[in-house]
Amino acid sequence: MRFVIVMMVSVLFWGCASKADYFEPKSEYPVDPWVKGYSNPDDCLGGEKLAARKFFLPEYPKSEFNAGWQGWVILRLDVNADGNTENVKVERSVPGGRFDRSARRAVEGWVFEPPVDGAMANCRVLIRFKLGGVSLGG
Image 1 (cartoon, rainbow, N blue to C red):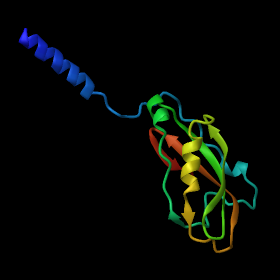
Image 2 (image 1 turned 180 degrees about the horizontal axis):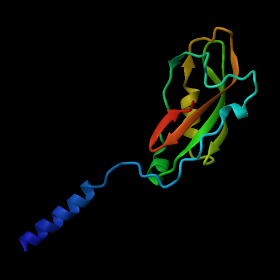
Image 3 (image 1 turned 120 degrees about the vertical axis):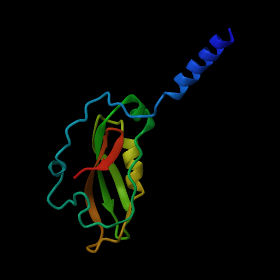
Image 4 (image 1 turned 30 degrees about the vertical axis):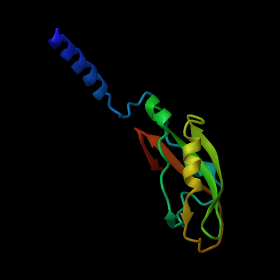
């Protein structure tokens, strides 16, 4: 009887210990958008003229990670003369709304070296949430 109890407890602990925290995609990653298609010729794209002082990628939202969602967000932002981000807005995201808050919060915290030519308006950046990781689009 003791052997049966020990085996049952072992199986119970093994089942709890074997649950891994890994990403398992349950959605296809949507095709990256053509970011330049959303912009005007005077807009800055991807911050070519910007040097980051304080920069971090967004966190993959835990609920979306656990559900296996993948997607991307295009954000529009301005950079003031001091290098701080302002007016951060989601321009488009797929799937809509799943990654918006995480992406927007991260970008609102970005700080750049003061732009040489003064404030910059309508900068766009693509943030990918793919295979459980986060990256900037090119």
